[in-house]
Image 1 (cartoon, one colour):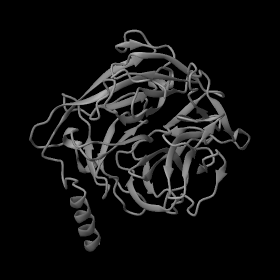
Image 2 (tube, helix red, strand yellow):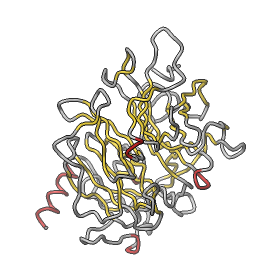
Image 3 (cartoon, helix red, strand yellow):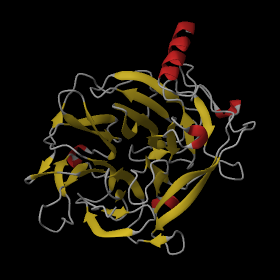
Length: 379
């Protein structure tokens, strides 16, 4: 155990990850940019209902998947809506990814945005050169007859090609698709025998080439998550589906879904893994290598920042007023009946004693692991 601890510490130092962030108690500010309700944010967009997945075109606007209206809408960093609204066939889009490769072709062109849905389908959108952008995505996979409910989507490469990874919450598995949207079997199975029964893959993100997967407890019908303190786990897999490590167990996890790695200019939690809870709207920070819990994002009153119905998390791309050190989020407030898109910025950072991490914030799982310019909007 000692040698493992020392090895992890050396790896963290090699990667430039601070061994502790307790001396810096940064304050974070939430700004609501878009809502479906007038007066709830700087901009109003009736299409933004249960805003879930979030994906940035690296050189243009953000795309948001709206589960409540079966659409995807685009915004700049001030929340100004684009005129392009894309309808997702089958409705209920959840996860969304941006594809920069020449794979995942729709018609004659590579798709640029791909969506997973709670209806058990995948849909893809490809720009049409020399034509107006399409306003309807194309269904490229349908697994609804098997009862699939896709809650998340990621895209990664394993050295032989590009693949899509969808979390099938109902059937408790991760489904993998090749560059032609065909289901495939990889050498790994995305399994973890130590995971308690009743927990299923919920959110998934490609972070630094590995696939980070969150798990939430299934309800009686295995259709939705169950909220509650300690009801969550995070595993890290390689792109072939082999388990690399258990990163976090229980603790403050509460139906976790959104994940993002903070840049070096995000205050106290720079270079940490940020995890958003759908269950209670809080955002927790973990060391990337050890999984040690380092606290939660706090507001000016030193209380944890909480966003009702929090879903996606992603840092900006550096264009269209979308700074790379601003954390953008999506949410479905009021039991997913409304929608919210916004941003979180670090506004102060000063030294002092940090009491946000108490022993009561950490519990253990059954194995004793602690929970710790004018950019084109659619190309």
